Image (cartoon, rainbow, N blue to C red; front, side, top):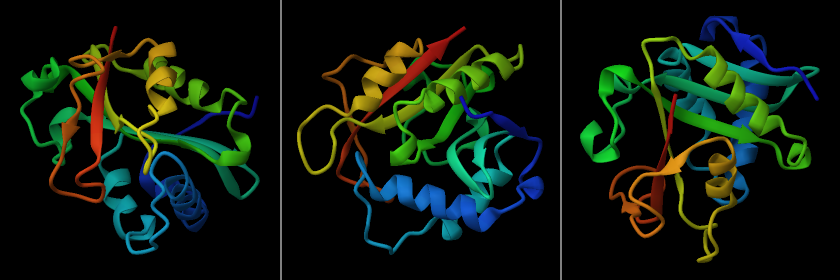
Length: 184
């Protein structure tokens, strides 16, 4: 199993271009299939990293096999509903804003190692992790395998499988998403 590295802050990421490339490659594949090339990691990732005290990477030489970024819920401004909607308390919740593993490394438990490391590192003032993911593998109606992945990590669906949110803003607007939470 490749090593998982906690990067203390965004300024210490050694090869940011490689990280951009990894994030773009993950988001071009399932479930997102965002191969448009119009919204690239270099245009938005720095803001996410700056707000993320939890930057976990799975390096491979100068590249990355996977990544996980999380930040306090209160610092994430892209959710459309108040925290009570998701069954969390803002001050004690981490928001897992990004998790990805490159296609060739899937099935090697890298995603599990990243999430479990986040759970292990979660400070005592936090008791919940919230994540949102696509309900379906776009453009199908086949359930996103990430849902079962997060369930294996101890997350539960907020509102159940029949309670997706359809967001009308942002990169993946009009694609149903589900929210999942982990409680310590």
